[in-house]
Length: 464
Image 1: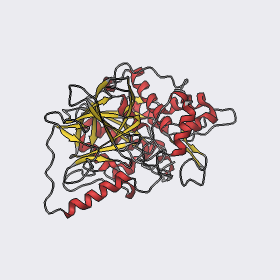
Image 2: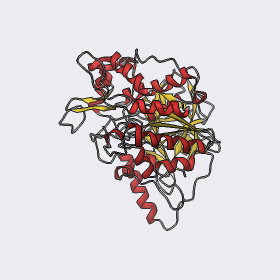
Image 3: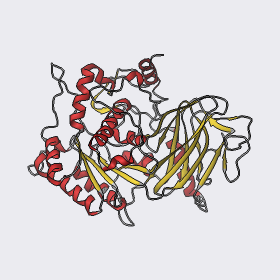
């Protein structure tokens, strides 16, 4: 099957039924209700945690995860899946890797953990067959992308995941929007999604990460970890490009301006966690430009707040990085991009020069990329789907601001390429041997692969 046809087929399936609250959310909500009713709270889990997946003999010192080991608050960990998860056992001499869990549909593994950064090590593969696994964490953060193992091959991969809550300190919390209360980003749990053609999970180890370097993200709907298919943003793709000792803490949210990011306590949350040597990426404009207050504007309130974010990060001895906002998908009759962001990208460029702050010019790179793709093919990077693509979708989805996973990944490729080209300090956190990327020659859609997560929504994110 052609990859483009495959993408169209996945979109027709929609990755499963479109439901207001996906099964994982229902299960965790039920668990939370049960835990309130328990007369005595479950004992907290002690790190490091080691899990042996499969029905064969469990490895010494490992907790066994059977297909029936579903999440409960009493246990504090377990599987969540709408479809059966199956165990496979191969004859061998290693109890840890001779068996594994697999499924034809995505499945989740959930662990109760307090806020912090956690080093996750997975053993993947089939001792007698092949496997293909994509791993997402929390709200669809891409950690491992389309990892394929040859027949009989098993591999270990390590990455670091940020687990957080809205708490800033004993008295303060982020003022979450109502839709955020069910997001997997904001609970005391680590959630891992195992997806793709044939995920084979043999073992999992979780340790407290030892002082990883953190990339904090401040931004809007083009940056945030979008919770549901088919929406996506570059911030949730960035973790897949990082070394194991680096982590992304994505505090962006749809509809945000610089002012709202402050007033809702999101900047305070960043500053409560950021450490010397960490990085703060800042990308705003799409919503800021709608503020017509005389004190607002690209060279007034917007620039002043950028300066404030930069001062606050530097006061913590962290490194601010400015990211100009990508263009909206708006072409003129000659196939050239029309600037709809007014003076905001130039205002950010000026602040970067004024305060000697590294600048990633995603605005310029997106123009190159869009024009290389052209008016029609750019639709494949945005949320453009005809009626009937998803269950219950009776109208066309047509959004020229928000990306689908393919478009979000291309934006992340631009970010990574700019880091490499400029030799920015944050480049030391990138994986080795990342191939170069030229926005004038985007990755062909035929080479792109994305297994849809089960949770999908037709509701457009805030912002435009």
